[in-house]
Amino acid sequence: MAGKKVAEQILGIVAQYMKDLSFENVISYAKMEQSEQSPQIDVQLKVNVEKGAEPNRYIVALVTNIQAKVKDPLFIMDLTYVGDFVIEGFPQEMIDPILYVECPRLLFPFARSIIASCVSEGGFPPLYLAPVNFAELYQQQLESKNQTIQ
Image 1 (cartoon, rainbow, N blue to C red):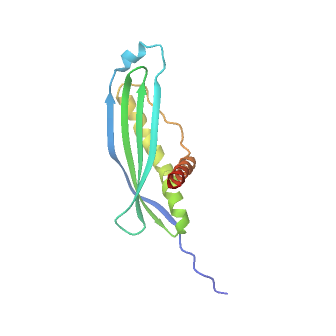
Image 2: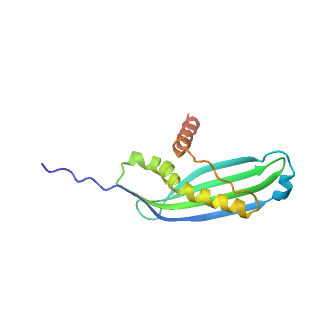
Image 3: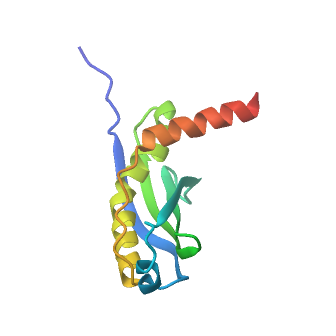
């Protein structure tokens, strides 16, 4: 019995790079040490996706905005870390979850390392971001999109 040939599923990173990096040291760490309060760190993370120039190519950007403050801002950091992905052989309904969950999950360790290094080079203790549940983030994004439509 001859069966249908199953298409090979491919999820590959063609390239990854920092598209944008900004670190503003507002108040030196020495001044922060004089405060008895621990800094409050606000991390905003979002995923942007666009179709690449070639078929089955997608550009996924992990956009991170971080602000640390006690009373006043200590530092502000923005990082856009991008991956150029090739995705082939998956059913169409799986493409969005791959783009918004799996691709950022693959990029995150590299962005996390850049953030820790940059904050450390900026004169502060390294900032190690906790792991992110991109599936939950994607689900929240879908729910907010559905609420906007209604």
